[in-house]
Length: 323
Ligand code: KIV
Image (cartoon, rainbow, N blue to C red; front, side, top):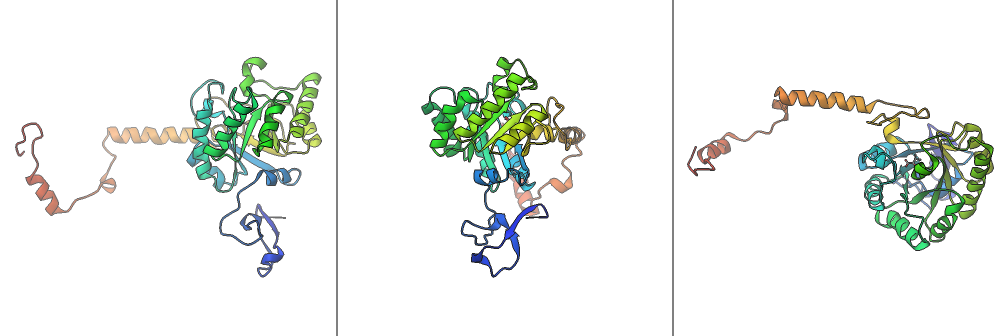
């Protein structure tokens, strides 16, 4: 049951003295009311399929993660898109596992409730199972992610299985897979032709069989996303995949128009933060130049006696003589 946008459920027998309903996220595993909101799990995400739309957003640092969590995001994705929107590369390919660990650590420190999922970057899950587990393990153990995301279909099934068998939840990613941008020939809609659409359906089934708890679909036609969402048993989270998925994901910098280089058709800009930042910083620069900042309200004083003592002892640092 939904009340005011929060998940509510009838109080469990353990805490029946408090009649009525309470926010499910404030029940601990024994069903007892806890002051700490409960952290979102991959199991909860799976159970949201067909019941409640999943809201996912990327985050790459502490303040972004904190704000996104306060705003109610279910999943914070530390996407390798950070290579483009934070580090200034022209693709996600240069992003390293160290970059991902660094940014995921910051996001995990802020996330008390939302599920933190971190991308395994380019070529970190294509060698052997041992390397894949080492890299996924770093994101979980060192950086605090609760799951990892991998791009690809049937070809990555052995790596998905290795992680799932080791207790690492995996989110799949099909459609446009930006780590393969040079192979697919650009950032363009995928799965428009029958063969490609059919292959995507098969890849999705293979990933589900391998144990993924959710799949991101990027830049595919709405009817194909709808078909996939209907056919597979795990939540489908779309980006440029239309209205009929189980959830949506957007890149933080796109959604807020925060120095995001382009605004693709599938992005809705909910704010224009970049413009506001430029206006504010321009004013700061002007006030520094004009000496309007800082003014009296920004400075710290000193008592008169100390000031007099200081004046009496002020020496010229070059001559050591009193000034
Ligand atoms: O890296 C990323 O931000 C992503 C999203 C676009 C889904 O993979």
